[in-house]
Length: 176
Length: 177
Image 1 (tube, one colour):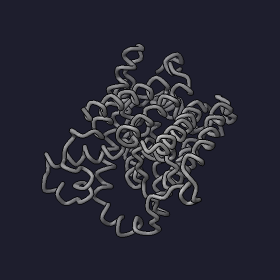
Image 2: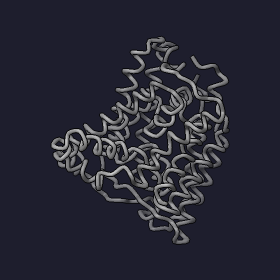
Image 3: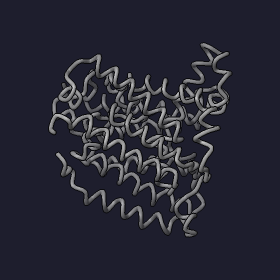
Image 4: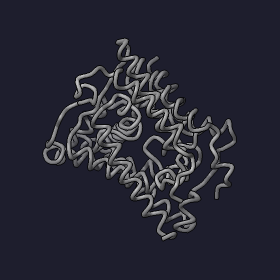
């Protein structure tokens, strides 16, 4: 039952990615070039809805939260590395799978490249863990707990701000 | 090469954004936040253990991530669902199309498939290396993490966008300089 739920939720996610153009190399690279902001608006809307929905669930005691650990500078460097790959392929690990299924042959190569990148990381992990990943460990910290306020109190206004920003951003970027 | 009509999405940005938000909310209510990149490691682990068990046994990270060495998990089914759903959506809307070299790429780097496919591979390598290094990708960190107000996800998403924008403008805009 849980397996089927995973498949259905994943399929819904994949279908939305496909139908909204998030799996398109053109849409992603033009978003990163700040020429076509539709994907930025989409991400802001997703985060806005997520912030409000997840934290209202959490306030009702119904959310299964899972916050990732913060380690600095490791997470910051990881984001820099990820961004380079994102711009070069025009896909992220999820949208590459969606694009691959649409017949985008280059996305297959991104997926296979990703499998290699992941396995190389796995074998370098013991050294990274002892080095870069061992410094600046803060655990699963969140903004609202650091400020000592309830999650919903912070997430609802921030979520509304994200939704407002998503609506206000022009679809065509200024830099073209 | 794609015609512009094929690039124009069926869903507007707000429907796509709210749809992804809804998937996340349902997932958090029923199981856990969404994530994709961990399953690349799980798949690697299961494959490597089947082909070269002695090599797989040398990585504690693989063993820890691919708990039980099984693909029959909720998490893997979610990731398997992504291409399935995308395939069905593309099929239903008549958007299945073979394409090796994207339009933006060929207008900057030429139509050579070999070049595009090689860089797709390299980009994918960098992408997943970065994702595993940071403990998540666009789904796990940006969508799930920011929605939970996770500080780690805020750091990852910020540096991701900075380097993504700098790299994309450097890669694709050089001609216009």
